[in-house]
Image (cartoon, rainbow over all chains, first blue to last red; front, side):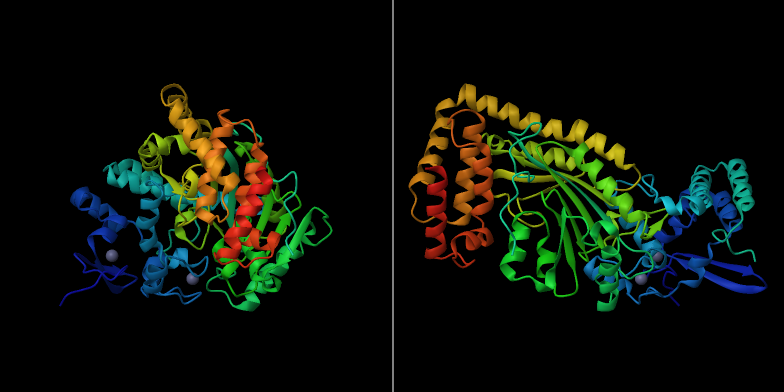
Length: 167
Length: 347
Ligand SMILES: [Zn+2]
Ligand SMILES: [Zn+2]
């Protein structure tokens, strides 16, 4: 039987079974989404091994649907109009938006401009976390596993929900 | 009703590189946290956003310098006039849901509420004055930030309805007049530079419009991964000077090597504007564009550039309609009224 990608609708080529909290979990990804998740075929078996050890962010497990849970916009409708429905669409469609934004923004993937004042306080940790996550992906891609392990430790030190997975 | 243009408006002929840069614009896109974007929002949501803006002291009507206009209460012609003055977009003029715009007396500041994003804050200035326009837009932004929480993510920055505007949600633009590059058939250099530097090139009336009269609106497309200041410095420090230099070089070639050709098309344009009895919109703008370069290069020594700028605005359908009582359609009446207006302004 042919599986569709968990993140988008394309045919899956990367398949994996994980045991998490005593439950079997199947993962099917198309090559693009697999690369975005760190299952890069260029990374070699070591990188894949390491990637398996990295907990998957909770939102990518829960959001299998192709509609935004907040406003109800479907990915098909977004593709047609090119306009999102609400701020939460950015989370709901993150995997679809990543390549699209990267293409429009000369490869950029993280904000580094003005931060609204009232958000600065609780933003620090989140910002630090998203920076570390980016460094982690880069370290894995470069097969720098010692560095990756260090970054992962700092991430775990920060706590919070972005790492998720390990209740 | 929309009144006549203020004498201090951004359409004045002044500022740095005024002969090539007509105006500078900075625009910020912002959305209110926790409210669906405008396209997906309900009318109560949209009214709520209007209400939030109007509760900010600056927009509550206490500031004599700012005028608030409800779009639903405006006639078609007045909405068109605001589009022609670059204070609102076509899309915003044509929408049918609750929306409004705040406009400063000098028309250098306008805030569209419920365009594609909840807020589109824009500042305009004559000539090359992006730093001043950025300064003003930042002040207005801070005013908003002290009372409204914007949709923001640490990764993507300011969240916009169109995902290609995320990050700073900022657009720096200049309106350039590039007739010499057209005549010397070197506009390809501008297109190439735009491609290399990730710039958007639009016509006189923004998105999708033609570059009538060789007026081009150039703006940055990159909004993510770099700060507002860095974007400004790059745009102001290298992008615009490069394009201005292309046009300056083409103008000097015209003056030194093709002087007769330059004088010929400027005087022909002037002559037609002074004697035509029927003038279509495209023709009027094309001729005024030629008169403008002629005036900038000293081929003719009148009228003032400010007069040409005012005509560039007043020959447009809604302004013509307001000034001479014709309809907004292009017909013999409006063509004749336009020709008469031009003759009396230049005569
Ligand atoms: Zn996929
Ligand atoms: Zn949504």
